[in-house]
Length: 268
View 1 (spheres, rainbow, N blue to C red):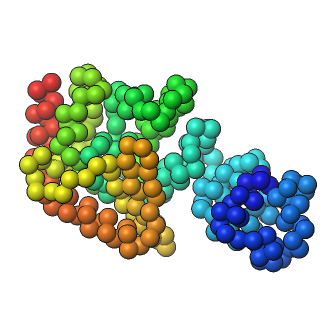
View 2 (cartoon, one colour):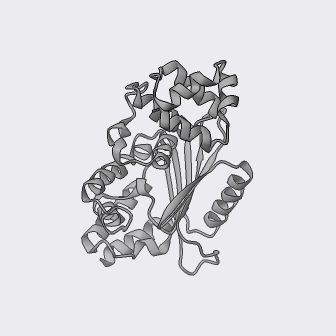
View 3 (tube, one colour):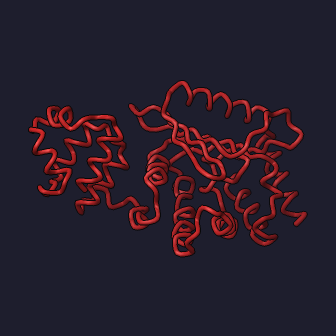
């Protein structure tokens, strides 16, 4: 725990003396905490978390290290051993979001059916451990709660290519297309397809803008085959929002999108 706090302090670019003064401690006390000479208490973690301006997930992980779990309803906690800090932050923000808007050339994780999700994860070079893959599959399927619990509205604009990409096999693709149709009929979901002949700027991956309860400002999440990035800069988030609006403007209507998905499903 001490080593992690030291790493976070250094990552924030703060020297020990500055942090100690902000906390109202002498420098030797902070040194003893960081080196593990003195056990760290929960209230001390809270003080340092504020000074270091830690994200909610980082703070939660530190408290978890002390055996504190403030919100036991967070379903993903039991998968903590396979979740990176960034992935856990994304899941936390999804759970808090009031609205999500995504444009993607991939099917977003929280909209994937089981067979499609399994093929996506198992065929990834970034999940080499089969045991991790199984747990990550469970996490991905659980993320669908943001849709099925109707706690957030979801606006998804997907590339037509996702309806034909058959890497997962015919049966899994059939299941996935039916799943998209089922989701598209939910009141809190707006699903639209960008046809392959649309005059849209090509892009790869996915961008999601998450609306959060006030006073938090929206954040964006960009994802591509080998990584992802959480974006909090307000200007950059606005630029992504404009791009999402553009993709939506060249997409088919909801009814037309449903008919296109159904036609691809029938063809299989």
